[in-house]
Image 1 (tube, rainbow, N blue to C red):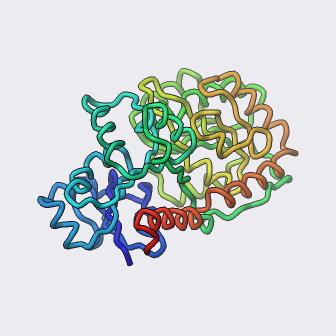
Image 2: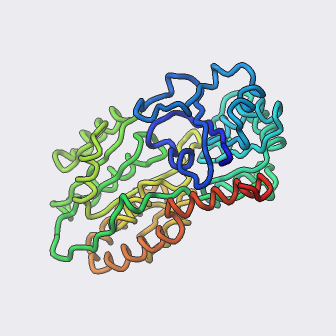
Image 3: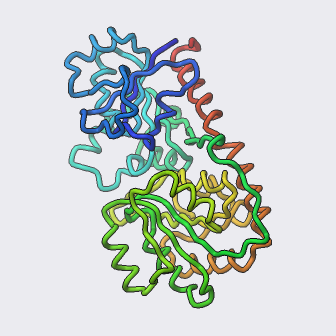
Length: 355
């Protein structure tokens, strides 16, 4: 079984663990930069190694019998270049967001990217939008192959819309950072709150904007109709998903240029059968077809988002078709098992067809 050495940002369940540890017919080495990035100790095993403890890339690769290198962000691809140079092994780099846009990057990043594009063998952006951005800054199209991230459909059972239920629970999940657009959603919710006095908004996430969003909730006088939940257990997340009537992802380009790929939370909501509202940001239109799988609006537009919320709350008769179409879309293009098999095929090609 060929072995792939993966380098990702940290070891926790959100960091693409299936794309590292569950690729069919391939063994793995799970590399992280330092022990402090070993966030979830339940994922520690004898296949986890630390980059800062490897003094000879050539000897390490030989000792571990590594056949392929896979970095899960562009900046990590740069860190694997010495392994590529010393061993001449194929190097793949997944592209997941602003590493494709070159926005707000540290000094030397652009030069590092030029070297990575020149020496790397293949780049795997998580959507067509990011693939196009890579071509814009000079990556040869023949070095690019889109590989959508998948969701484990065994964990997200589809539920039919309950026509007898008339709650108006609006849910969003994601890190509390600008590109998630939580502040835009809160302002849109305020605009519809008088027309829908029973509507409630819940945000699940943690991050640097928590205090700012709590302050905004006070300024907007959202009261007990709004809650922000951070660091909640999976059980609570599952309960909130079951209670949700609408799922919203108000994604937008941040002021520093940071962008999304396609949020996994949207895929999960669609798989579960929750009607979705989102924006035309980045790769999201590759997931959602407006007025078929859900509703899309212009990013960073409070008025359009408020209108979309109002439209969905007033047109529950559309929800069953939307959610059925959404589940089908996820099954066809974002099923984790299918995407992992595609990842294995890509590995096969780089190894000359052997596996």
